[in-house]
Image (tube, rainbow, N blue to C red):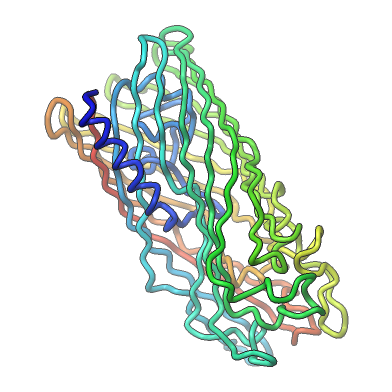
Length: 428
């Protein structure tokens, strides 16, 4: 590339990196897929790389996509409602921020530095979670000792992933990405837990504005063509050890630690006809890697004191379990200028019914995602791609979720989602 073009690519990467922390996600708090093309196929892509966001799924794919760059943006709209049912059979309903739209950018660049080796960088939102309640939740903030504020959390995670990949033979490649991770978080409306009874570090629980955290991890991958019609792949991402959220050291277990969990996946892509590919991925997300995410609420004394004091090494958390996610997608070339895609993504949501109380703040309960996608060739070297995703409404009703010393009753969670994305794809 010319110096001018390299500067343009660098500027686009920086712009995507600056704005990417608006990400919001769906397989727990991870995105259902990475890159508009893969997102249109339910997120499948371990054995079927299509663009320079391939490193987010399997870095080996970067050796197979050639010289290109991709720039995209998705509009994400999660509709989430919760309610607390007590003696009142209708319960108290809370709007968790249904009217908020999220813009999720992505950028990827890849260059074949030799016939067998590529270097690229992928910039993307790894995941996130947001609730923005329009009023205080009395169980979290009743105004005692402090003015009650509206409850909510905002978590976002950004990856910048420089990637090297090598062709070992035609159709057979390995790759490695260095995941440079940044995340930020804030919480509001948790004054009832901002005291020495509930937290190991009062003053570092809520309403402390945004706090940033950084870390480094690795993603490894392999893909191979086992026949003219079948390709397979495998990928592993290490646990990303993150610096602590110091402003929230009295909220998250291990004095504010919030590590990004490891995950791994295998995939297969079948060329059913000369113009049709069917891809299937199976992914495991290890939320048990993060105590802040995995630790349960735990026992509560008759006086309403958390026995797993917030902020301690084994402090109370969200109680999320590991997830296994299935991603099935199809891509069909209608003609030389038009490709259509469709997909399905399913993963049993990670929140047990007994853990819905704290998850009023993080109701990531959707399970089934249905996707459509398309790519139009603009000219010999340029394309426009689009995708649509609908995550079907899912409700999780609490079961003994609110301790009796907190007043008893149940916390119930509900969510569905829509997303629309556009990307410009350029080869050179």
